[in-house]
Length: 350
Image (cartoon, rainbow, N blue to C red; front, side, top):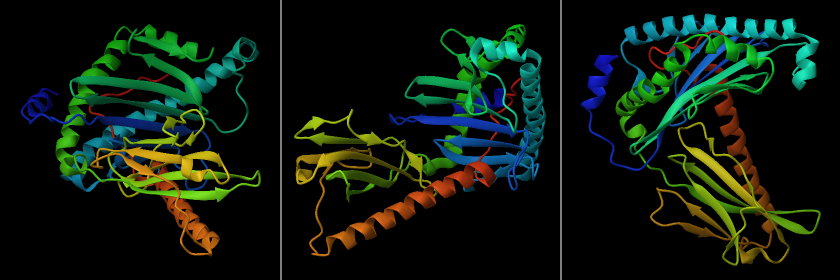
């Protein structure tokens, strides 16, 4: 740990204002389906996967070229992940027992009665830094719902359900639990983030401007959906805003979360429903650090008289890009493109 601290302190500081993040996610399932591991762990730097481990291969594997170091590194990571898998699977069994023990009482308290069938425990944690400011997050989920969260401001575990109170009280009885989480999120996580940023080099300092386009779709209600696309950009921070005669339409537009394209870049879109024939009154504004200045886009009808075929072709291409991006992101997360351990940090069993 001290060697890592001295190594990081010797590095040149990043003078840019870009934010950077390191986070991990674990998942364990009681009844995994075909081709799905019972446990898998994922690690991300700036939302890009860099290491992966799952219960099928029982081996930590790199997902980024900059992480392909000597075999000793991954031998150690494999041992750490294997230990964490056992702890995490124990946590899943413990939570199931909490539900079985509480029975109808938990159902009366908060409607959290456990249903029959497979069950899943998720855990995500990590840190972010920008300039001299740092922050962290730490959260458990059970069957896709909030279970337990660590509030870093008050340094208290927040139980989302009656059942989660069992885990909360168990960890609160461990005098070192909160201090361990705080030390990792505020110190060790940041040190590892800085180390990975240095190892990755230009992978995390490059800037790719977005490729943009506005598409048009006629609706049966006799109005039109205008969709503003931004694709192939890095870093992930971007702003898409529709305006009508210079006024922001934040409340009236549909905006999806920024998502990975599968090639190290990101994509995003924002749409708005407008009256037929009023399309030119609406403009999409795009802001990204890869652009020399913000862009203003409007719908431009194709010059060809057969405009509908052109529109359909554009939508098919964009739809294929979105589907491929989503498929690649799913495979990256569920199979071999994610992972990480986060130094010596090991979560306690629930």
